[in-house]
Length: 218
Image (cartoon, rainbow, N blue to C red):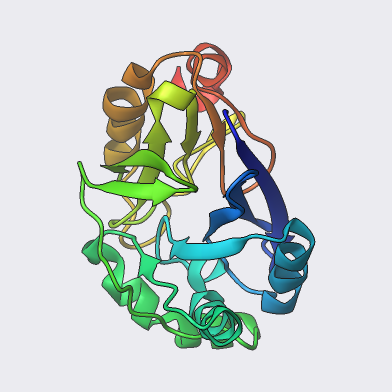
């Protein structure tokens, strides 16, 4: 990826991958899915030393979005400028607003609801470190789940849609296994086998490797 650098911090007891992506020359970038442990994310940002232009959310589960409000406030105080939260799709609004209740059920503290500054829809474009990433709405794990793809860079951020050797859970009341498989096959596979991706938990992979060997996609 020309000029782009990335780092992942596993946050919350769910070991969710919060991603930092920035341009090594301009020192500007984004935070993707700050689920919690905001002081750890801030420490990682201090080490990376770049200005955060926006916070991106793939979906509304607490381990992906629970720290977004606190991180936004901290960054705006430090940087002296707005840091908008963008994503997910509006269909996840009920999940974002329910984060405090979800957190209480798991005995977790410091997680707040958040209202994005911009809801995202299929076909939208977001800027990540000066590069344009397309937005694909990929429901199933969560009704408003979105992913960020840059085919020209051979790179994507897939949240909890697709993992190395697995796929997102759909055993929630609002989960839809068929919709998830359809999104993977009709929206992700056409991106090309060479696309490398970061995911919400565990190590990343490539579209091609998962198409060939992922047991959930046979």
